[in-house]
Length: 285
Length: 267
Ligand SMILES: Nc1ncnc2c1ncn2[C@@H]1O[C@H](COP(=O)(O)OP(=O)(O)O)[C@@H](O)[C@H]1O
Ligand SMILES: [Mg+2]
Image (cartoon, rainbow over all chains, first blue to last red; front, side, top):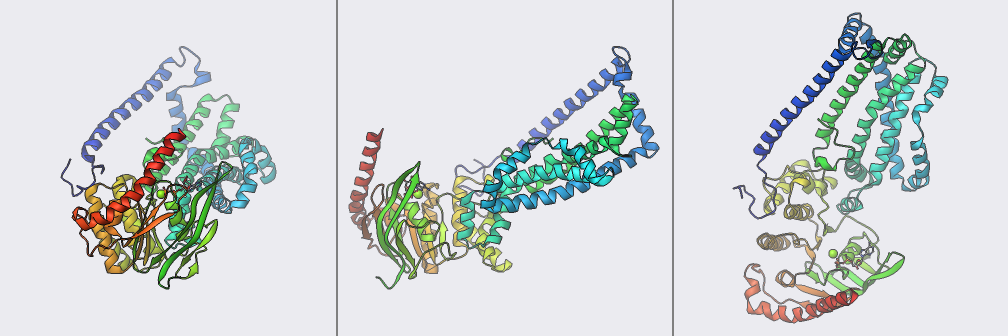
């Protein structure tokens, strides 16, 4: 045993954290090296085989995509497309997330209401929500509103459902301990139920990100005059594979950036939790 | 009725329905606990000890009979009684320090005083240096101590403790018994303590209630006439201790034996 102050507990965790950290970091470095190597290999293979094994008309090639991205970037069109799509996605996400978390929390807390509504919530959760997209264009027009509403809808369902489930999973013993310690109903909601449900809420917020972006883009596919989705649709209709793939690449990068931000936020907010217990976790690094 | 009784348990019964069947867990239990007393309940596991405490604190209602707290029937949780539950039930999202502060925080104790009192009790239960750890970073024994500290920190004048020293090793157990007796004397609290360890019961208590095996009822209540202050390290070796311990052990061991016999028949 080490010479720490703790001597009374044989089972006290006393890992030598420095050793563990250095092992981890060398492992992580190697892992990243392999990941980069794999990505590079795929790109090189694609570049070399395109136009030889198959026509680059159908599959384009990395250098052409890079070229296309560079041109749309310097012309300012890329930035303006990204801005239009992101505005719809972010506004919708914010709107849907707030509504989803608040409603999920309130309905789950009103236990009788939760019991009555439960089958309906499950049923609505099961419908393919993207199929509502055309209807949203009919309701909210071809402007940004319909895209915002679509992104909001996607986000709302995921955050609502996760929050609802998380609040329903609360350990009654913890609530009882708080009651015995003289906590009132509001205090219990704020200081027990909310933190207990937070892993679920945060997981919901995270999985909703790509859905919000995809929702905005699908809205643009159906009817729009600008934005990433519009650009992709336009390229595809002109058989401009390079433009289509460039647009898809941009979307991929956007989703990755947002995921990274939320991962960081999650690790900080849930630092009290061993990572193995996190619902919907495990996508990190 | 005893005028001084802080808690009076009157003909309390409690049934649970499990898998469609009614199971009697506590069967016609009556006893009084006086103000300032150290009262211990021992009994074989499953005899209804935890159920009794849950009813005293108001988390459960008796199926029949009643429990009086300072003369009034207990109808729900009032926040006046301290309760160290058998499971640690720490809030995993709070650090050790913040867990200990919770009771005072809820009661609106000023931040300075709250931190000072938490710090003092954390040191006394031997957890100095671990203040900023979360539950998953603490061992079972440490969690048990935080659970105890969390209740002692807000200084309730009636404290229920359900096998609080269960997950501790012998040395820590003796240290915490000493601490508990010290705090009990300082604060003049009333303690209702549950254990399955008769040694511990006799060492700490003014009176010991022995329960029968399931469904639990009162077998006997025994006065422990041992001088105070007691030295928990040496008292079990004294003759006077044995005089109290031996007859009580006879009672308890018959309950435990029959329990074991029934179990083996039940197989
Ligand atoms: N919520 C419950 N539902 C059904 N049965 C219960 C419940 N709580 C306790 N019991 C039963 O009541 C009896 C007493 O339990 P408990 O009070 O925990 O015993 P002890 O604390 O003395 O070990 C046991 O037989 C247990 O199975
Ligand atoms: Mg018990």
